[in-house]
Image (tube, rainbow, N blue to C red; front, side):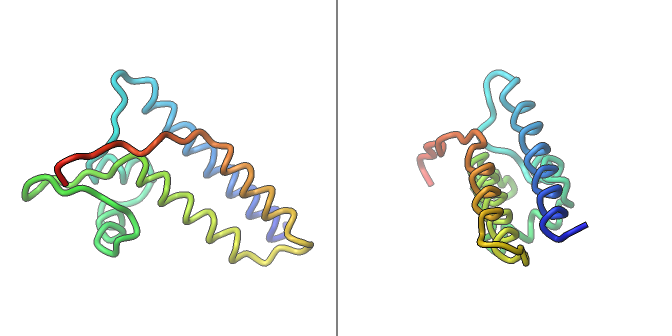
Length: 122
């Protein structure tokens, strides 16, 4: 299997997983705009420690409420995933003139996005 085919299959799996997670979030009323670290870890299939490390390094934006509560906005998770996918596409060794990269970016940008929530008092 070529690198490009492997990358395309991986991107499809990631896009499907994100779409499933977004559908489950959208199906509940009212929609949640921010999630606690354990929820984010479950949604992204990561450990809580990994999510906390991304927050500490500033790679995943979060909001601190009080001393012990940290929330990650839905828009921050979307930005985090988009940055990871963009980096994966840019760093792969695809043959050709870049049409496959553009196709991958177009497919990812076509995914539904929500506007950033307005957070006041921070």
